[in-house]
Image (cartoon, rainbow, N blue to C red; front, side):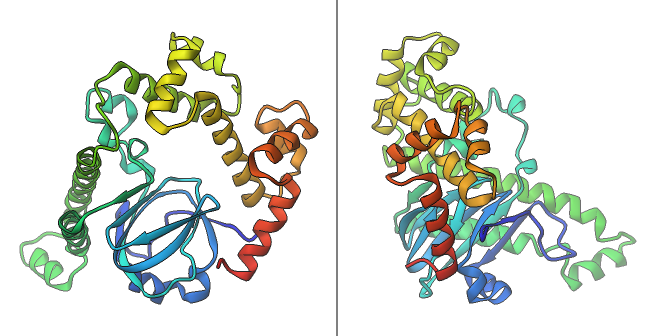
Length: 313
């Protein structure tokens, strides 16, 4: 397939689990042709558009972006920068390992988990300046230990630069947490999340997390409601309030998204994909997929390959 999986591999000898660079730098490093391919990442990516407009393709859907758009991409998503060239912005990559374990976040703000942020935020001018300043500071700080001036001053004191590297890595980690927390605050100010203290919102949060863990095993709403200790009606109300669709529809949407990813990212036979997603046979899976995507799995796989070879409009 044409979709390439990318691991986190910054240019050596860069030592940190967070990398920050601007779009112009990415274009110079990869070239125009590589920028128009579709990739599946094994790391998180924040894309902040600071100037111009562009259309990016995320999980096979076109997303119109303009100055102030912040995209938050998760590992496993399919992403294409699109064919627009007259735009600029910042890109922040970070490995999942830099995030604190979930157990340690139990009593911490949910903002420290990127999954609790939306896939897209539209920042106003003031918020854009704040976000740009934060990312620029991260970029500048990531260069501290590698600058010749720093190396010389350290050695004059009898130290090696490696001693500073751990400190800079910790600094970048805390700056990343600060940025994620601020983005959560900005999102709440926009009123998009609603009150997080309500029982319905907490129920939806638990359902969303459970769905991400079990969508390949559980396709019935009753499986989730029983595990969460609530009725199907209350779970549906909570989901409608949070995302504007029923809980059952959200389950189908998540299964369909994973099907699209497997069809696009792999050469696995359709019958194998059906089994991975909990379907009894390929025919049942194909019927479900056509209902959700308006095309058969084979047609989707062919269309995706053609689009990636010819470039997205």
